[in-house]
Image (cartoon, rainbow, N blue to C red):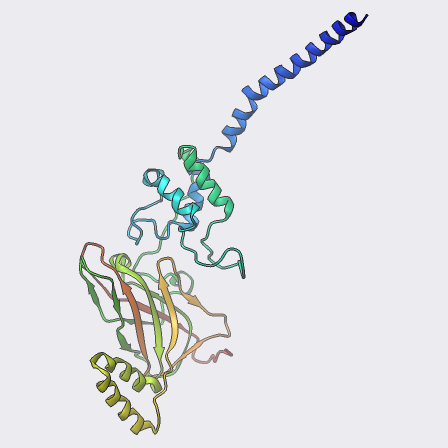
Amino acid sequence: MRVDRGGGCGRRGVTGRGLLAVGAGLLAAGLPGAAAAQTQVTFSRDVAPIFQRSCQECHRPDSMAPMSLRTYEETRPWARAIRSRVEAREMPPWFLDKTVGIQQFINDISLSDAEIDTIVRWVDSGAPEGNPADLPPPLTWPSGDRFRLESELGPPDLVVKSVPFTMPAVAQDAFFRPIVDVPLTEPRWIRAAETKPSGRDGRRIAHHASTFVHQPESREFLDAERALLQGQAAADAVLQVARDRAGGDPIDTREMLTEWAQGKGGELYPEDVGKLVLPGARVEFSIHYHAVGEEITDQLEAGWWFHPRDVTPKY
């Protein structure tokens, strides 16, 4: 009886185990492979959109990055280097702490943990191209001769250009601070401002730049600051003339207007915000240039869009 029951139970058990084994075999033979095929990370479908949003501003022809990352053919040789830089959060550059403070920013190019994981898995799986039909439409980039804000505001009302600077083919980084007059005959309120290199070659050597507006009352202060280049005695002489004229120390009214680096657009203020520029003002450019193996001359351009003359912004 015990044997018969055992046999019966054994037969039923073998049947059940057999079904489980067959099912497990089918699962092992089919479903994981299907899932892998569905979840395989490819350049065309998964990686290219990330690169478009966060990388191609710099990594494209005629820009400052050392390689272009627009196509699979351009990107594949750099796959391991990309993995290393992305996983270390060195690229794309984003220097705000991801763990504290405000985390919602306009034009945030930083990568999420999920995007980093996507790139790492793509490289670790052999960096497959995938189906080119899955690629997003290629991005188009504005000409280096146009301001980005032109697409929204039209050409600027005023363009102030820096003094031209020639960067040698081989040299240490240069920090250039030209100061130019603003050709205004009446007070104007700036509603938008943008700074850019003068063209394609300028983008290759310009690392970053800032512009500052000096109102007329700070001209003596600025003159003294520039005179320091000839020594303290020269600066003291200029300051003394200014004190005699004004009856006190000159005022520094320098105000930062724009910053530019690769990928940076313009500054468009809210409707009730503006920055006043008076006749007699001057613009100071603070520019960082670097050598690229070819002698290039650049002239930074500051484009300004004004509020209508009958508008006085609240702020």
